[in-house]
Image (tube, rainbow, N blue to C red; front, side):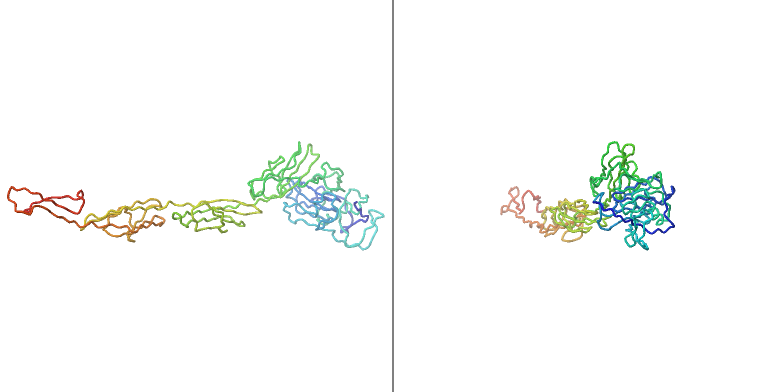
Length: 486
């Protein structure tokens, strides 16, 4: 059961008396009730230097939005404002303490004044409500009004004139209006002037809902986009706001946001049914995580199957953590550069923002293997003949450098060499090396000639056979005969 305190909490007036007047050109907007709840204020008029005063007895969630919300410079809550979830929660138990939805840039910020202390000389009879008394002590102060009547007892609250006087003195500016209610805040209140200085809100077209939040989100701040979706109301008009300013062109129940940190802020939707007889709003913070922007310089392995590859990252990776993995899933560290890599696939995992993860992969190329084949030919002449080493070279990165027995480099792959043992070294442009050793050119065998014929004195006219024999294959030897007289 709600406890109605019979005592009236008042404050000590600093002026000469209670002011009940408002100024239609004033810049101070006042809102006060008893049960707290979700107070939604739409700034729909361009009023310079707006100051908002709010007073309540129970926790209040304050949402301020609209096309001219940027004109709000200061918000002061001067009701009961515990810093821990205590007291009554007649509207919404999720509103545990009084807060202002983030998103507005206020020059003087948001202030909460819990029972501003006053000094009363004694317990005196209340002049507004005869028969009621106000107590002296430290627990007296502004509490909030619930009615536009100055003669109606309000169960321990102030009256509207006292609230006007308190905030008028506090801000030092004229009060434009005060809007008040006993129960939970409902509907969305705007800047329109009431018929009189005080407007008492008795009926709510839109009853407070226990379903929170009204806005749902599809996607995440890590994805390429997310969708904010308001409850669908047939025939309703929707207007979206970001940080209190209209989001132009968005008039449906959903709002699609592409991942971009420039779109971060507090998003609100204002929903109005039919001819405007019902309006409500809700807000939600959206803060995209900045996606890492980087470039990768991949260096291929210099030689086939060598550990000379590397990957170097450059760019905006501040605040992100990275980790490298090889094709087998083994971790390779968390630096921007990994080196001594074999050819193959390497994976990168980047963690950033609040739980966002990005994946990438790179390939270190493997150049073709340097292949060298050699064909040797022995020398053909024992006295001055040269042998030959003919090289067949492929793969690697041409042109090639050829060295014989670690001698000067050349490019000729057709080598005429004297008999002997040789080591041939071939290098490509990346200094990948192939060595062929134990290549031998044999000398030509010594030519031996024998002549066979009759061992007799021959007379003119006689015939005989002479046979010449050499230690070579006959097909490789050419014979030429001369008489002894030349």
